[in-house]
Image (cartoon, rainbow, N blue to C red; front, side):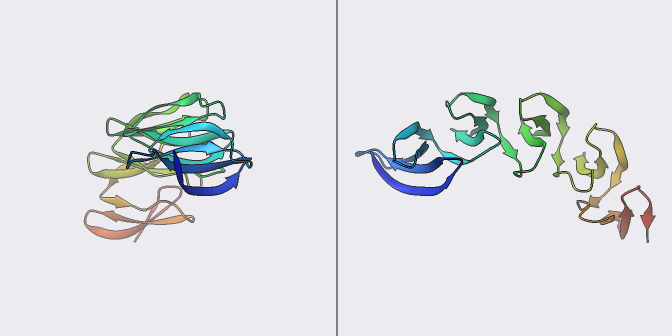
Length: 176
């Protein structure tokens, strides 16, 4: 095995990429500061540990492992996304998006064609080419009637409604 790439030390572990002596595929794992391999390089991609879990890709599927290389969030998802301070993980399975918590409990059913991260308490969702917004309990707060809706980076967001660009307040009021 030849180490060809190292990522910065985080949470006491270094992500690394390695190629077998005869192979061309680079696989990824984790090592400690002394370069002792902790998790063998079996993954196509690894991200740093956050909240004790690392995002990994095995084949074409994503999940999260702990430091003992045990999947906590099963490696079954087509895509996963999170930020370090997120309480929930955005996941996609068979083209449907939703949210799970860090123990893989489904918090928001995987029922959306697309979903944004939460901003100002709302996540923008898409169903059948229309957009709206939900809260963290999956309550619709902005009706799913817009042709486009940007995430709520502030108290208002740009949207397209009936072919016209408008702004929508976080309360759901249209501002023309």
